Structure formats: structure tokens, C-alpha cells
Amino acid sequence: MANVLVFIDNPGDALKKSSLELLTAGRALGETAVAVNGDVHPAVSAAFAEYGVTAVFQPSAADLDDYLVAPKAAYLAAAAAAAGASTVLLDNSPEGKEIAARLGIRLNAGVITDVVGVDADGTAHKSVLAGSYTTAAKATTPVSVLTLKANSITPEPASAATAPESSIVEVPDDGTATAARITSREQKVASGRPDLTDARIVVAGGRGLDGDFGPVEELADALGAAVGASRAATDAGWISHDAQVGQTGKTVSPQLYISAGISGAIQQKAGMQTAKVIVAINKDAESPVFEIADFGIIGDLFDVLPQATEEIKKRKG
Amino acid sequence: MKIIVLVKHVPDAQFDRHLNGEGYTTDRDESILSELDEYALEAALQLAEARGGAKAGNQVIALSMGPAGAVNAVKKSLQMGATEGVHLTDSALAGSDAAATSLALAAAIRHVGGVDLVLTGMASTDGETSLVPAQLAERLGLPQVTFASSLTVDGGRLTARRDADTYSETVEAPLPAVVSVTDQINEPRYPNFKGIIAAKRKSITTLSLADIGVDPAQVGRSGSWTTVTTAAERPPRTAGTIITDEGDAGIKLVDFLAAQKLL
Ligand SMILES: Cc1cc2nc3c(=O)[nH]c(=O)nc-3n(C[C@H](O)[C@H](O)[C@H](O)COP(=O)(O)OP(=O)(O)OC[C@H]3O[C@@H](n4cnc5c(N)ncnc54)[C@H](O)[C@@H]3O)c2cc1C
Ligand SMILES: Nc1ncnc2c1ncn2[C@@H]1O[C@H](COP(=O)(O)O)[C@@H](O)[C@H]1O
Image (cartoon, rainbow over all chains, first blue to last red; front, side, top):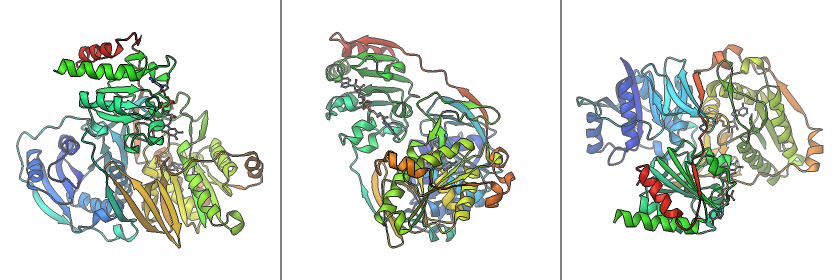
């Protein structure tokens, strides 16, 4: 069977769902080793065993987080060699994709991003051109590097637990020699709402909110949803840029996307048209968003959203 | 300062876009300069202008790799204010993936030589992979700063801001470096009449693979490390039920969610 290497960056106290998805996808392809950066807590070790991981690698250097991706790619290339991996799996975050990019050059390996499923023969499935095509792609090289989108597969523990062996991988110096250095970092305050990229429900607002995200946030909280926005709303400073959905923001594929006061420009659609169900509220019947809505309401969002929020609260008791 | 800006000629997203032919490459009729590369060009022009512009010897070179039509992305860049253009074109390049594209672009950048900064867009609006800038940096052995939302250069070093979901950070790197910029960094200018006239006198160098010393077998569909095996157009979303609010649309919305088991 083939060997697979999964990269998990700073797992923290417990593995995220997206990491469990990577481990599950890896196991379907072959024997799975993990390359970790950062501390491995006992709960994380336990999850590795439960998900059938056979080996765990850690870097010889503790300062990989001080640089932009290059040393991580160098470390991962060394780990891939140690594992004899023919497939390397990473998450599809901007950083995951960049590490994958550089790793691909180091390993002479084809890189495929935005993957939503992998077949046993390594064929990767993804959608392209803003969700208008679904394609299958394959690396033609001995090693392939794939970045897997969150929420693409259901995490499943292995049928039998393993006792993974740990070892240290020497990080080649050429990774840090030319890397950009991170000189300061400020944490942002967490919203307490679900993460936009893997939320089951997203409620998004646009210019129609006219500066007041209250009605969108209240509906989102009643539904346990994440809050999204159009670029018009983030550019106006009504909400943080992190909330932007679209070509230059986040791509989301939730079960439900509620769009309020958003016209539905092509760049906005690029980030949300693979949602399972789309609901749109807009007072202009001609808005392009109605072309893709499963349920559209021509009306004023300041009437419709609060009424819906009240009704949900009533039904949920 | 000598800055290369990478500009890609991409199908206009305002029209339907299609994948065609062997290898499912994008149909390039109705193509334009990738909107996201205009931010890189604007960033380059601002850096050059702050140093006295072309008169003071600052160069902003727009480089595009692509078929004959890609020269239009270079021309538009010249109209916006780039000082010269380079069009890398060769029939053997057709169907190049990110690895092959970065190989050819790296060779073209070395061929131009003496570059202080390579600026790119955050992603191409057709490929949308964001792989090329990082691969280019790896191939050129240069520092990589991606997704910069601000950029300053001072005495051979650059400083940039980056925003992630849970943090913002400041990064520093020595020049030369490869930097990709986001659409938050600036507001790209429109070419004005003077710019359009001036562009006619600016030179565009056309390069082939032979000129930059790249073996055609390393690029194009056959030199790429990935291949597209199938592509199917997703059926367009069919419009669903559209209602007009008569005072109870919020309740009807909740009825719809309940029926879809989404509550
Ligand atoms: C390079 C580039 C990248 C971009 N990237 C993105 C991106 O990632 N994401 C993105 O979203 N956009 C992006 N855009 C911008 C995009 O083109 C649109 O300009 C933007 O999406 C418009 O936002 P909007 O729909 O909120 O505003 P508008 O287009 O102004 O629409 C507002 C809508 O609200 C409705 N409305 C107003 N008041 C009410 C009310 N009381 N009740 C109900 N409805 C009301 C109006 O009828 C209108 O349809 C990008 C543009 C460029 C050039
Ligand atoms: N064929 C090309 N010619 C010029 N620049 C390119 C080309 N392909 C990619 N780029 C640059 O690389 C950036 C990222 O592209 P991509 O990795 O394809 O998403 C773009 O914004 C361009 O600046």
C-alpha cells in the first residue's frame, strides 16, 4: 500500500474537524504518517492512535512559526522523504496551499488545491471557474501534493487503533535562509460564532444593511450560524474583512446561505454558489441574486429578518 | 528600483467561462487583464513614483505569459503606467499548470535580470490556485511574502501587513523578493488619455522559450505535473420560489427552512 503524509500545523489541545478529515482521507489511500509542527498534547496523540496513524514526525526546530511558510515546506519535504510518502495531504487554508506550492517544487510533485474528494488511484475532485465546473485531476508525478477543503468528507476513526511511533525530522537550513520573517502578530478577538468557512449555516449581509449588521447577527445567532458579508459591506467598514465572502474573500459551501441586501455580483457568487440551499432577501426584484436563490423574498430586510428571528425563537421555545 | 509585475490575461468573469478541448483548458476569447493583477501593478507604480518615477530610473516591467492575445494584458499595463512590457509566448507553453508556469516565469525573470521586486496578484481569476507566487519564490530562491495588504520598501528591505482569520501580522524580508498583494492594498487607477497615448511609444519585448533557455518538454501540457482527466459543467442553479413580502415573509421564510429541515 502507498504511504501518505498528513501535515498538521499547531494542533493545539485537540485536533480540529478538518484535521480529522485529512487523517480519514489519508487512511483511505494508504498507511498514514503525520508531520506535526508545534506541541503534541496527549489528546492529540490519542486521536492519532484512534485514526490509525502509524508514525508521527516533529521538526528539529521550534521556530518554524517565526517565518512565512518556506521552512515549513522544507521540513515537510524532509518528512515526506522519511515517510516514503507518495501522497502529501494538507489543509486548504491560504497557508496550507502555499506550503503545498513550495513543497511541490521541492518534491517535483504535482499540486492540486481545493480538493473535495480523492479516489483510491489518487484522482482528486474539485470545482473550478467559481464553482461552474466540477473536474477530476491527477498528478502525473510519483509524488502528489493535495490540499483538502474542510467539510468535504466525514471523519471516521480507524477500525483498529494504532500505536504510532514518534521521531524527529531535521529541518534543512535552506528553508529559513531566504524566508520572510514575522516581526509581530496581533490576535483578533474571537466572535464566539461558528467559523465562516466550515459553518453549516451562513447569514450574510451587504450594502442593503446600510451600516447596521444587527438584523443579520440576530438571525445568525437564532440559527447558530456564522456571519458573512459582501465586499461592499466590508469595504464600508461595517464588519471586519474576515467576514467577506466571494472571489477575494472566503469560499463557503454551507447547507444554507441566507443573503440579505446583497445584489449577487459575480465576485460574490464565486464564494457561495455551491451552498446547498440559498435564500435571498432583496428589495429589488431584478437583483441577480434571485437567479440562484432556492427561496427568494422581494422585500425590505429590516422587516423580514427580525420577523424571521422572532419566529425561530418562538418555534425553538 | 526595478520591479517586475506579473500580469495574466484571463477570461472575463462577466461572461460564461468554458473549459475546452484536450486537457480542458480555459477558453480565452473575451479575455482581459486579471482584475486582481491590477492591484499588483498599482502597488508597483506607487513604489516607483515615490522614488521619482521613470525619470529617476525606476522601472516597472509588466510580464505576461500566454498566447498571442495575452499581449493585451501587457498593453493595458503600459497604459496604466508600466514603463515596459514583456510577453512570453510559445506554442509549447499551452496547457501549463502552476509548476510549469512558475518554471517558465522564473526563467523569464532571470532573463530580464537585476530585478529588486516581483509583484503578483493574490490569485489568478481563472486558475484561482494562488500557487504561482509561492512556486516562483521557491524556484528563484527568494523570500516570499504573500497576501500583502500593505507594502513599504526602505533601504533594501520590505515590510508588509498580512491579515489572517484569527490574527494580523507584520513581516519583513530583504530584497529581492516575491510579493503577492490582495485587493485591500490600494485602489488601482484607470488608464487616462495621456497614459493611452504614452503606451503606444513604450516597448514590448516578445520572448520565446528558446530566448529564455527553457526546454519545451518541461512546460505545456506534457511538461506539467498535473492533468485534468474530466470536466463537467455544473448544471446552472435553477431559480426557486420567489415571493413578494406581504407582511409575513419572515414567517414564510421560517416555514421554508422547517420544510428543508434546516432549523
Ligand atoms: C477584483 C474584485 C474582487 C471582488 N471581490 C468580491 C468578493 O470577494 N465578495 C463580494 O461580495 N464582492 C466582491 N467584489 C465586489 C462586487 O463586484 C460587488 O461590488 C459587491 O459584491 C456588491 O456588494 P453588495 O451586493 O452588498 O452591494 P450592491 O451591489 O450595492 O447591492 C446592495 C443590494 O441591497 C439591496 N437592498 C438595499 N436596501 C435593502 C433593504 N432595506 N432590504 C433589502 N434589500 C436591500 C439592493 O436592492 C441591492 O441589490 C469584488 C470586486 C472586484 C472588482
Ligand atoms: N501566465 C501568467 N502570466 C503572468 N503572470 C501569471 C501567470 N499565471 C499566474 N501569474 C501570476 O501569479 C498570480 C497567481 O496566480 P495563480 O497561482 O494562478 O492563482 C497571478 O495573480 C499573476 O500575478
